[in-house]
Image (tube, rainbow over all chains, first blue to last red):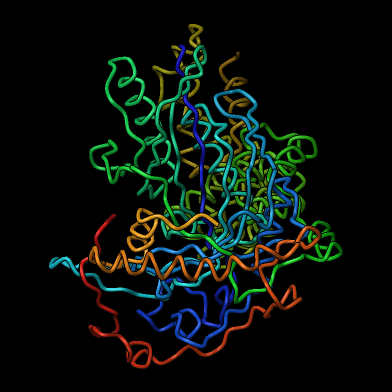
Length: 475
Length: 97
């Protein structure tokens, strides 16, 4: 194919500081409208913005994790435009001197290693929210105005929609590990705007760049990019006229539609923000931030494979969120069976969290108690089937696995003497299965084992039952 | 210094959301050129070894700690708005450029 997709991603991240970027108003998602505003974020005359040190630190932290350089010195800039989502008629942003720049991120997508260059990660302020009224007017809520916002821009290195999807998953995971943002796309804490065009690998010819907006999930980004690649391929093949434009993703119809055409380049009249002196991050401070970086998802994934012998898949699922990885490690440490710990965390624990819409940090079963349950299985005290009954009981009662097993009398029956009668009963009640088995149909034994397990409410040791039945039937 | 062209005056007026008559555009063009000529005197100064200056005060790294301060009561937030509904600002139709 002569035409290759060429995709860049611009991602905005709301930083999880306590207060806003340039004033002390609380940085909070769901407060009553305009209850988190002051003269600074409203842009009232005579007010003076002062940068939040934590927000600067968070951008440096992210920049370092993305292998970026930290600027020796940089400035804020005014981006001027008229739109009521900003009370000041300008946004404080960064222009030609970003705080961090020139990094990269590596991951695997479509089964291939990918390296995407990071052009910059800079700091700016978020805008307010408009609610459009049926009569055409709009209501404005400035609570979000002035919230610290990090902008991460890649070079146009992506060539597939899948790469974009994996990048966003990796980035989200990274931001959460760094504890700089909750990074929930649904709450607008992470927003992605892809720019898509095609380049002809033979002639070097390029199609006009199309920016896509209104993407509320990682899946939407993937689908919109895929749609846009196909739309542009179709257009070049059929010689249709193409424009540099902004298109909106229509989730219901699964298509992009024109939002606005760009006849001229945007003219934001950028100039250095006179109210804010330049930033020159102290190299010692930067070194401290670098030294305080946590183990990052990719490193942790590799360690889970080498230290615990987990399959790649388990390592990926468990490390996607830091709190899940922490929980798993606590369970694994307390039960010394990492694979079992992994199975429980990815299986029953995750199912419970999904069902109750909980985060693992508020999961009522502590890692030590879950480890206790795994130990009982491994020691042969209960079967894994019984464990599935013990598990919800432990969540509901905050008792240990031993206590639940004791109270409910769920101990595994390991004594052949105790099983003798029910084994006889199984043979007497299932003449057909017995006959089939004797005729060489191995599977028929399953019916007999099942009978015994039912009679003992799942408490019989299945291996022992198997063994005893085979003995009785002379196999 | 090259004079500011009528096109540039129109462009700047457009960016500033100013709707100017032809006569006003002419007059402002003349005035802007006069201002630019005045500033052009600065061009005569030798700035060969002077780094580009954006701030006259030699200060860097002015920070505040990440601490929450009280916000304004919502009625004071809305007080100066030409139009407000409940606790919202209300603005005329926003036209996408």
